[in-house]
Image (cartoon, rainbow, N blue to C red; front, side, top):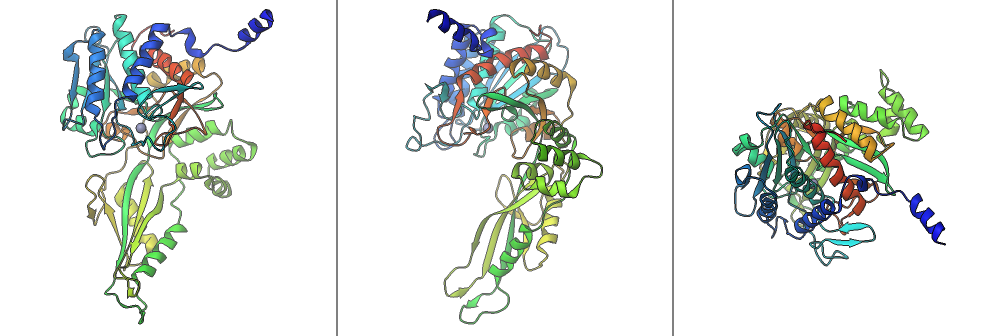
Length: 477
Ligand SMILES: [Zn+2]
């Protein structure tokens, strides 16, 4: 009996983190995660300042100089923490910036099985709002800074960690605010953003390791028709509802052109190695020169692929009319677009005008921050994908092979948008990489009962420590 049990125990692999994370580091990372989860940082009633101050106190206790940490922001509730681990001497290059948002999406106790603002460990998972998005990663960053400081580690360039407000909502985005008001505090040669990218697993088994190197641009447009209206017993040919409905119908059947960039091309090439036979054949045909149209059409039926190969625009809201017995005086639809890198919102507005093909339906842009409807959209092109720098990618690939063996590192384009849009636009190339492994069918960010595998969390703690050392001249284990 005893022998059999020992044998079984030996066969069950020890978690990956076990090799490099001692009990005290593990406990520290868990305490920090608990503290962050239990500070409410929602836009409605929470405070990122409270979370920023709590992390600042921990860093201070670990030996950081007060002068190397600042909590600042546009108002009392939307504070951001900027902390700097100083290089030895003058440093070998521009600092590395790591950004993480502290705010979380709203969560109601009545919707959840557990209290969303308590860290609960159950069945191998940590439950709580922000475990996936993204207090898990914030806690990893603070833990890593503390471990590096305690051992007296001196990087070969400054490491800056910025924990910020209002990524999920609100009007005080911390990364935007810091770049506008205190660029010197966070200026860097490149940035990492653990809010995107990451390790995709299936039943805990790693499939791939994604690094977000590009993002689509977000834009809202208003389609609107107006009409004098009149009595509904006397219909006339010009009807605002029909005009907008016809415009939407044309939009429904119009696809934006197929287009790949360096990142999506590399992503699909890697994907072709692991996909099912038909998909793999189609991916190869799509990557060929010239690309095969039938393959593009088949792959475009998969929403995740479709969103990577073209700009998408979809109707998301509709309102019209003012009485059951009156001809409509206005009809208005909102169309949300996700625009490929290298294109501008104004370019897409003109495309929409062409697709709508009806001068009676206006196509106007809705301002990002103020919600104002304006005749023209910004003409600036969204940033091109960041270059896959060897000094960023090589250590990541080397460590990924150890932490998630067999899973290829793939560059990836986010179909949504993260705070990387601000740093990229400011000329700080930003790589999205979360070291957290999340099951493909267990993405609970923004949802109820958000959770993270306990082993996934500790792997992330172990990974970021090794990765930051490898990036800054420390001995890579
Ligand atoms: Zn997030």
